[in-house]
Image (cartoon, rainbow, N blue to C red; front, side, top):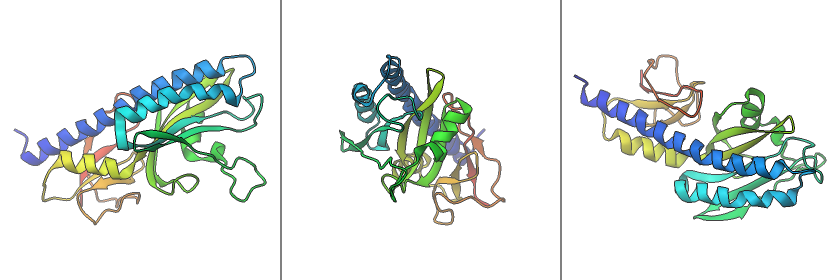
Length: 231
C-alpha cells in the first residue's frame, strides 16, 4: 500500500499533468486560428488580429496561470514585415497587445527567432515546454513557455503561452499538501519548477543527489518532468 507521501506525490504529478495538458489543448485552438490566418495568399499583420478570440479563450479558461500568449511568425512569411510577434498579455482576464522591438538596429531588439522557446518547437516540430527562465524580452517575470509549431507554406512559426511560475508553484503546493520531506518538481533538464522548501530555488538546476522520482504523466507534450524527494 502506498504511504501518504507516495499518494500525495502521485496526486500532485497527475494535477500538474492535467494542468499542462489542458493548456496545450487550448493552445491547439490558437494554432488553428494561426494556420487559418497564414494560409491566405500574401499573409499580413492585419490578418493576425483574428487570433485574439482564441487567445482570449485560452486566458479565460486558465486564468492567472497564463501571463501571455500569441504567435511568433517565421521570418519572411508575412508580406509586410520580416519579423512579427502577435502577442497579448493577460491583464486580469483582459488582453493587452504587447509591442516588441523587432528592428535589428535597435538596442532593445527582441530576436525571438533565437530564443529557446521559439527554437524548441521550430527545430523539433513538436510541442515543447521551455524554462523556467526570466522573460527579459517581455515581462521580466519568471515563466515556463508552452509552445506548438505552426507549419505554413513550408515554414515553421510558433504559437506559445507563457505560464506563471507563481501559479505553477501554488498548484504544486496545494496538491502536495503538508509534507515533511523536501519535495521538488523538476524539468527534463533538471531545473526546479517548484518545491516545498527554500533549499531548492525555482529556475536553478537541482543537485545530482535528488532521486529519480515520479514522472509527471503528460499526454500532450513529449517531455519528462518529475517530482522527486530532496537529497
